[in-house]
Image 1 (tube, helix red, strand yellow):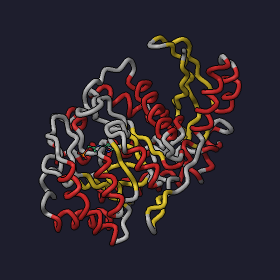
Image 2 (cartoon, rainbow, N blue to C red; image 1 turned 90 degrees about the horizontal axis):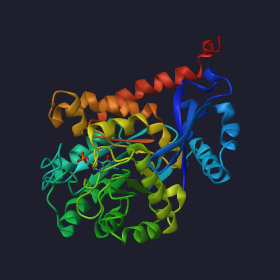
Image 3 (tube, rainbow, N blue to C red; image 1 turned 180 degrees about the vertical axis):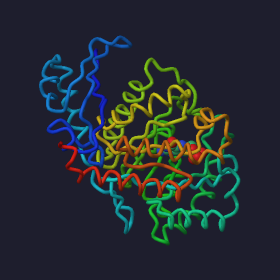
Length: 368
Ligand code: PMM
């Protein structure tokens, strides 16, 4: 059965820059004016054409019926805006990029492992510093998912994350729990976490979907190729962009089939999880396409290995500039949430980026 994909291939500064051709991507501050329409059968590309925004209906009408319905849905999804997410008293607006600050309470995470384990004061101080610097929410994790990380007993994972979550919740912070274990997720939600961030996209633990559905909490479904123990295994892709797109669509549909409301689901291409440098780069360049899935997009590349690989093997603590660069790339692609370690620096970049976007919207000389 052939499949169809719509990929934005040219971004515009504003709708007036490309009169009648530009659409607003994912309800954010980014516009796209040209698109690629790709039909594939397995690994074979059957047809490809390019079209401007004003020609979308005509381009889609030229497809066989079975594909036209899917393409119409993707076209509508590209322009779908997303309601804010309530996190206790806070509302997370998804019409502009938000920063998620990372707090790993683990012995072995690749960049901050050991800094906050068994040091609750240091962990909380760091979380509060990220909030003061402008993080919209804090992502609390108690298990390292780096390649080859040792397994952690779920009782220990609960003990690591729950006290931190309780404290942050009492302070009114928005919190996500970064875990793939239902017991940990359940304990974290009871302790006051608002959002579930599951790097296995709810494949690791069969109970997770039921718990998320019952709680009504939003869930972030991240792509990783491996199932079970090693999330990084089995990364052999025919085309990494299309394969990750298909996999996220399948997880979105599985979540909805499990009773999770569509407006509770965020998707994440899983940069660095079972992907080579070339595959990560291809995914990052293709980010605007993921709006065609119709869900808010989270992007996380902060301090990841790919930055070291492109910068003379800089160690994790010297990857801030590369991380900010990739965060900006995600903002330019209209991603609604960016997961970062260096909150203050990324907030500054975000503010400057935001200034440019706002100025473009009122720059009528573009019409000249
Ligand atoms: N990366 C890590 C952990 N959790 N969650 C999401 N949704 N997306 C990511 O890219 C992601 C994640 C690994 O990085 P870390 O060790 O710095 O937390």
